[in-house]
Length: 251
Image (tube, rainbow, N blue to C red):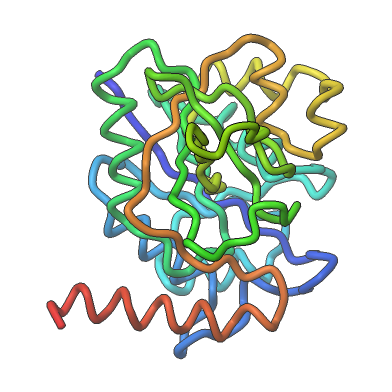
């Protein structure tokens, strides 16, 4: 029987926003909002906050989260995820939920978990959303993904892809969303692989799997949420949270 766990990596030492997981948003630490969204999702057997900082750990304990303490030397959230996953017993899949998206849609988390449950051959899964009509698709901070007809990723890039030679036949990329699910055995293999050339060129970790010919399923999200990278992003996150609460209230 499949057992799926969501893990929320959280670190104190963000270069652009130190202490970000504990910044108050609508009266709660940012990380608590993310944890609550995971708890609202269906299809999960547990939700774990993974951190190397006791300030974050104590805050998570205080609002009732399960916490796993990790090493401070990890270079990426996936490495932190891998350390926690190596300790788990009886777990078949893990979902990496970014710790800086307080308004992430719980139904998206449920969609990843549900897809992993019914499709046993999936080793890795992620999500995408439609670009807003006026989005700057050349913006390197907006990662693009193109997929095959089965919904598996062909490529991820910071560049505008694909090249459009004939506008009448243009294929439209989707915006990649930074949520991932892994089959546990594959995650252990993934973190053991060294960074690959395309991964290092684009600074996109998921290209490591692409370069090893691993299929990444891409599910479509109904909406995007604001990630908090800098203090300037807090206003957008609050707007998204209020919209989420309104939808829940049916307003």
